[in-house]
Image (cartoon, rainbow, N blue to C red; front, side, top):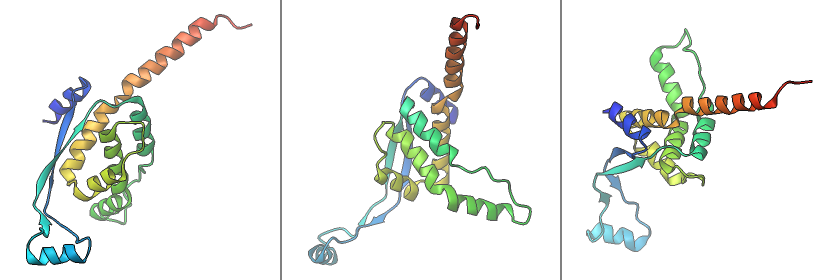
Length: 166
C-alpha cells in the first residue's frame, strides 16, 4: 500500500490520506445556543466522519520549509538509565507538534503560511498510523537525491566554464 502511494507521489499524482475523526462535542456559542441544545433543537455532538487529505508532489518552497522543520528534529541517543518506553514518551511530548507542522506544510504545499487550523487538526486527530503514512509520503515527496544531483551538475558546469586560473 505504501509502495503504491510512493509511486503515485513520484509520478506527481495526488496521494490521499484518510483520517477517521471521532465524535466531537459542540461548545455552545451563547445562552440561546445552549438552550436550543438542551431542548434538542441543536445537536450537542458531531458524529464521527472521515477526512481526506490529498498530498501532491512538493514544490521547491515546500521542500525548503519542510527541510527547515526537519532540521529542528533532534537526534538524541537513548539514555542508558531510561527505558525505551520512557524515551519514546519524552520524544512524543517534545516533537509531536513539529511532526504535525511538517505534515501540514506538505498538505498545504504553497509558499504562503500554513494555516494553524490545519496544524491543530493534524495534532488533535491523527493516530500513530496516520502520522507514519503521511510522514512516509512527505519523505518520498522531498526526493532530495534529485535536488542534490541537480546542484552537483550545476556546480560541475560552473567549474568547467571557468577555465584555467592565473
